[in-house]
Image (cartoon, rainbow, N blue to C red):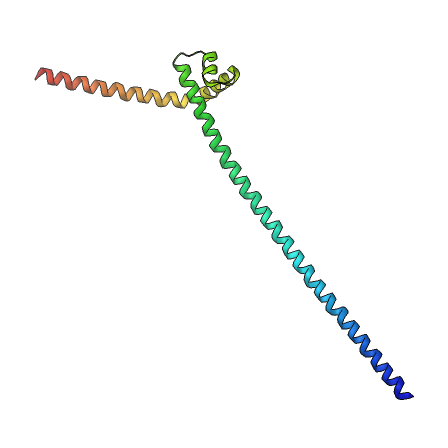
Length: 143
């Protein structure tokens, strides 16, 4: 009977080893799956951070372009006002509230000093060109 106890003990030990090996293999698979999860989570966070950065860059660029377009609108309104068109008439023509037209005129006047300086230089250039043309005509007539 001693052999039987030994055989039973050996068989029990083998069963315990198989169960432990299966448990350790399962634990290893769970560990690898956990690692895979956290790697994927990190990648997802990096993707979202990069997307947020690109969104911010695109938004900043769009805001700059929209500001330039608004300035162009203000220049058009100022041009109409320069043609001595009244604010209500400008508003009607552009299908805008009069208050918005006034705001655009105010915005264009904020940019006007640099534009006025540019225009005064242009007027000086035109005057000089006219003087040159008149002088050349006088020379032609006197010859």
